[in-house]
Image (cartoon, rainbow, N blue to C red; front, side):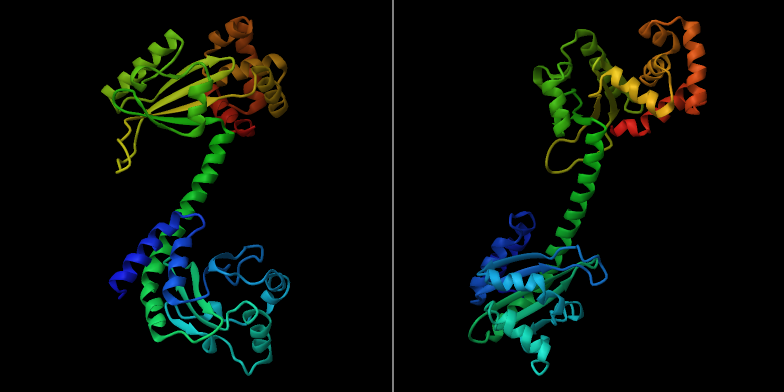
Length: 370
């Protein structure tokens, strides 16, 4: 068990260290002062069977190895590093003589070439392995004077808390990477989102949603932060859709075309998001999609992708944006009969069995992330 003072000093720093920059810098500094060490570090190493390009994450407090020694380590010594990192027992505190065999010339060479010049003549090291298998190595070291037994006791008592902190950090990092990949896909598809409460007020938005609010000219924050539009007809449609979904959350999502050139549309759906302590629970989510390409560009891309003639591409684009045959014919200056003839050619060239298929083919094609 950690004493009251150590618990207050170290555990707070362990918890906050997961979101600190640099990570765990306060914890390592406090541990260095508490143990009288010259240097403390927390290291995440690649798995032994992982690719070599995986880098070591090295967090530390105190004076690092001299630049020339550090360079030597990264250029060659790391390949002959004899410390048995992956064989260390989880949670056990090791002294240096338990990690190096000084009668072995290679071990002695490593000690003299790297550890001594780095001031790590005396050290304690502990490996912790969190639930998913990720390991971290905690080291305290100094140049002179052996550590007292209370340092071993302190490091040993810190182990379970460090393991829990590493586990939380790994979970957060995985969520961050997942969110980063998802956000990049959403960014490339030009989607943004807004969350709304039961009054249609904007609660939150991602960066793209905020950009569309501030720069689209079609979506704005109205009185009381309510989502609306500068265009009266569109504003009424938004208000009506929000009201309908709030009155009947089981009703179908509402799609609204905000602008045709440049293209901007929005899908309103009931929020399926659990509430939390950070803010009010959203009632609706508005997914907003903008197309940065002009209709002419999109028609060129459709022609290239599916081998469509210019008139066919214009009709395919109109149909993919939810227009009926008659609406699309009027939009691009065709008779309804001509539009029907063109649509049959489009279905043959794209392999679509109808308009619904065509919409799926186009919106699931590479054009979605162009």
